[in-house]
Length: 326
Image 1 (tube, rainbow, N blue to C red):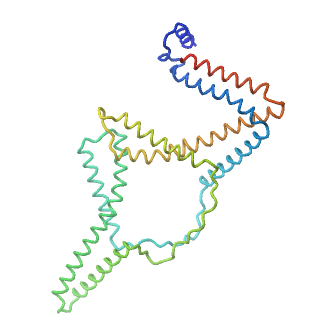
Image 2: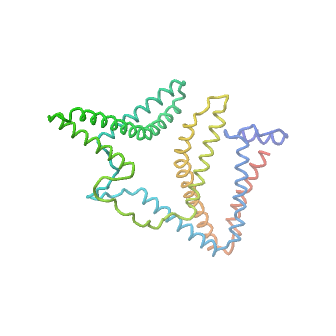
């Protein structure tokens, strides 16, 4: 309370109050809050212009949107029932030993990137964790490419070696020649499977179920717009924050770290939390305001009493805050 009295005394004396704090909050933010309250206080005029019929229709629309959103959330959060007999789905061909080459390629890539990162000095703990996670994704993708390339080279070399050995031992008939013929045939079969894999061939089995037509979506109107807006705002916020806090005088944030932060935080924090949560909160606030307003409209011929006085009180409080920060 003494901070508030001191701020008004400084304002009456003609001094700048922008650097003062009231209840631990800067006067600048109190002024911005006051402008917002002034706007909310003036909305009572809009309610008076709409009237009872339009407000009732608007309430029905808000209630339908809230019902659609809640049903959508329930479908997302409801546990999916697993069928007792899962149909076998065909996958891409996987020649024998190919998965081991994938693991070796991914591990080699991961070790190489980690060594190069720490040779450059590393970074803070948070940045290091994000960098290591991004390295894991890169190593997974690189491991597939390097593993299949190494697998093909190994098959070509082993097939050539088996063919040369058979050429030297062909006149003789012995168990060694029989085994070499079987090995040569198996190597050629693995190479043919690898080429078929690259062409998209799948393992024999049941075909994957045909895609069903998409069911009608239950997203309420404008929900996707809120999610997209929240994602964009969060991405811009992360980019600007990294740009100013990691400027050249400070340690610059690595580009892979910035990309991973934007890709991970934008849809989760920005899209789902800010966009979806803001949409739901806005629906609840608007619906509560409309219900309150309809209650007054049903009991009174107009808005001459309590609702206008509430709007006037909100406007006066906002104007006082705005005046103090001027």
